[in-house]
Image (tube, rainbow, N blue to C red; front, side):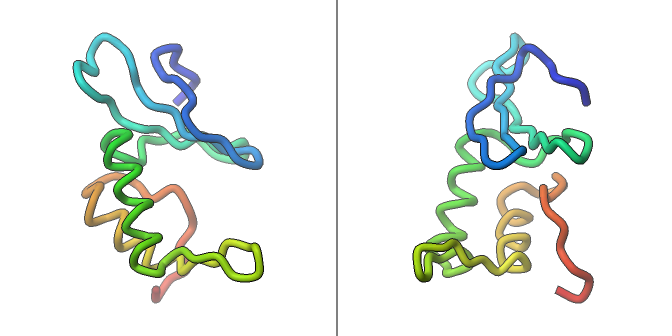
Length: 99
């Protein structure tokens, strides 16, 4: 997917960013795409509300936490939470096999 001007960047961090679709077909909310400099962009979240609720559940479940001023995550747990909220959409990160 090349950059579509109907997407507006909403979050960015170290060479990757998320953008929400705000074009004429979105009506109330559109899908969220994950853009990464080293890979093709792809739709990874149903909409911005689902993106935020997925991240909130990851934090509240302990799949993401802060230790010694650094983020610690369990990518397998985050993946499962992502799939529950965004069925059928790709997860934006690599998950090792067997997790």
